[in-house]
Length: 291
Image (cartoon, rainbow, N blue to C red; front, side):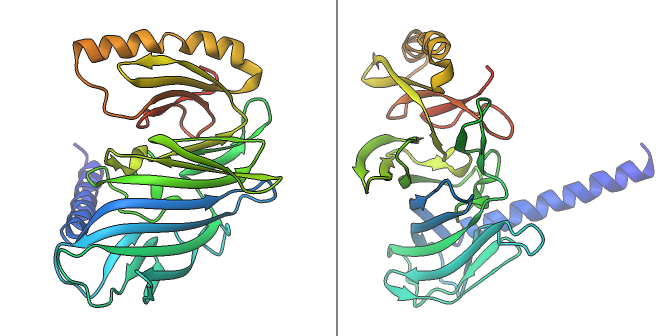
């Protein structure tokens, strides 16, 4: 092996060890139980306005702890800017730099649940892909794999850390919204906006916590072993999409009978426009739009 390759492999190994240690340290410090994301999108800009409430417990007493969130850079103008952070109802000090939020908790105790509310906004560099689909229609799709969720949500962005999540998504009312879990509520905000509330009961890693916002044609395919199955495709291709995804009932039935229970509240097969193509997100599988 050439010396340059040996040095490269050694560098990558050292980087991987440091990466693992960073997450292990944080996972030994806090235990995130639940994310509650309120997020608003619009058609005027690619800027999102959001508030994330994170329910957590401390595993050890610390003066500070860290979460992942890409900060706004001065070159592209993309990234997130934090307006405020509250611990329960008390403002706390924080530093947001190098794509990390360092939070200074007030009087943390072990075994007590705390809620940290993070109000922020910005244009995502990645993770939440805001673009036009193959038909020229505007779309918003989460594309978090493997660790890109922190481009648009504050979190511990590592596959080993799981939590439940709920979403309150406000969007122009010509869109529909799909997300993990089951639909809890849809509210008409005004003549122009609707809000969708989705929530999960199964803890998930951040890489499969996603939303999809687009003009969809939606078909309820059926219910298999109490699991509702649906198809979400672009209206221009609904005839082909409804036909192609109709086989999901038989496939889900086969896997439940032969392998075991399906763990999620629903199975939605979704035509999507993302960075890398399809992704096996929890309860709503995103397929490449040309599939």
